[in-house]
View 1 (cartoon, rainbow, N blue to C red):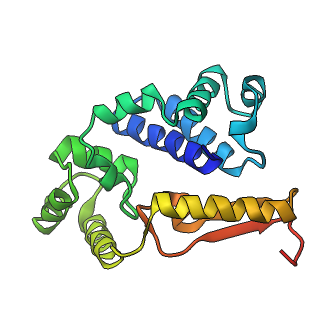
View 2 (view 1 turned 30 degrees about the vertical axis):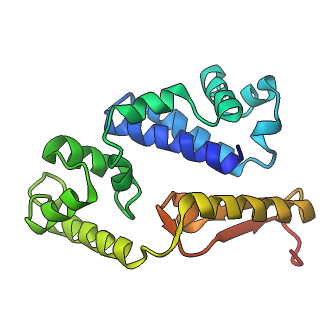
View 3 (view 1 turned 90 degrees about the vertical axis):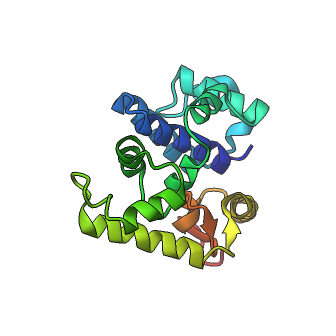
Length: 207
């Protein structure tokens, strides 16, 4: 499993924990770990367990979960969290501009579980009635839903991630000391990607 996939699972754990209203420090730990792994120069899968624990912000528990991801492709903890919610909640999380805090409000306060329910609630004006949401947020959600439908033919995140991982590995073979990182919709974990954006910092101009 490559670094981007590991980072994506850790970030998703953080999002699911936020929907559960878990400890903010725990949520931040997973998100920071995801950010660190995504930017790491070397492949985490190739590291020894002690080397993983030595990564800044990666403690014993996180290192164990990363090891589980490397060895099996998944973690029991992640799967248990997923089972606590309908699978369609992930569609809400991946909607452009709708973060885990908003999803938590929609899920707990309005019982919204699917994109269709979200669309209907927005059209009915139920979202703007929530404290802290308002008409502007409701309009942004409707726009995000329209954009999702408009770009339905784009590449799925998993496909784009595989292509990006191969491209990053190729670029690093020419600039091993550079910080080469996918950005844009791929970095944000959007459901689909229209293109692959990569930033190479510290690389020679010829790359």
